[in-house]
Length: 156
Image (cartoon, rainbow, N blue to C red; front, side):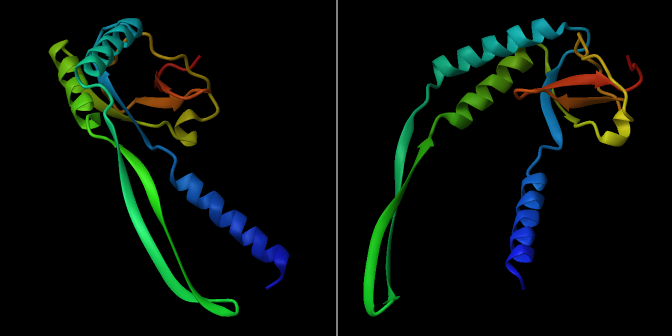
């Protein structure tokens, strides 16, 4: 196999792997009729409360390793450690945030990401109010991260 074909194959495989990592859903909270600004404020308030009650508590986790083998010209050994951190309060923060949003009347819901076929080359304005979940509501990715919900029955 030539170097060009091998390099192309590696790049194609890397592209496929990255494409398979793309999100296919958009989890959010809905409360039909509520403005998008109100949803953002309530979500931020719940995030702040959860962060105060369950602050980040990162602890290092060490995974030691050792190897023995034949290296060019001689036997040898090596060792080291992989160090990662774990936030032991992360799950409690998420759980508290979800409970806080439910107390405020929101329901967790996961919308699908809009497909190219659904968009059909048209433009849509983001919804300004929290929708009632239905098959014509999907999410689009925004530049800089995040997403917005659109109604496929109302193109611009």
